[in-house]
Image (cartoon, rainbow, N blue to C red; front, side):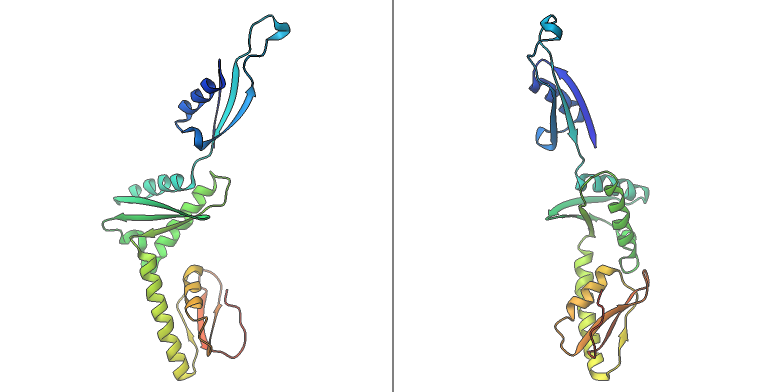
Length: 213
């Protein structure tokens, strides 16, 4: 959060001075009038009072996230560009460039860590709870399609053999994809077991209701 206070002959002049100091536009700030102009000074002896305003600017979550990511990728010697999309309470950032595999990591592990650190950095500077979701050249969409196909294939195997299948550890977001992909399979039950970060999805024949968190 950035704050500027200025005094001038008029409110507009004081506000413009604050905007110039902060380097922002009027529709990006909140303005508090501390002193109206035109009022006489003490006992009316010292002329009209000046206008005094306080202007507050809170950094945009998407802008802060990109600033953090630029420093992070530069430190990793990765040339990258950033696209920002705002969707409801989420800010989506897609990273583009060349040789970005180092930012994805094994099955997206590094990407998940980068997203966690970015959310942590932004949360320290903004008051709202905007969630930052980071993708790298559509990786998440491709990964989701892969997981859905895997879930369907393993569900068919469970129906044929009757044996349950325990998947490898996954992030909460990826586990949710598996659960959602199989939620309409009336013969199949999915649930999670284990502790983070080693929590796994289990696919089995439906016998009883279980936690799918």
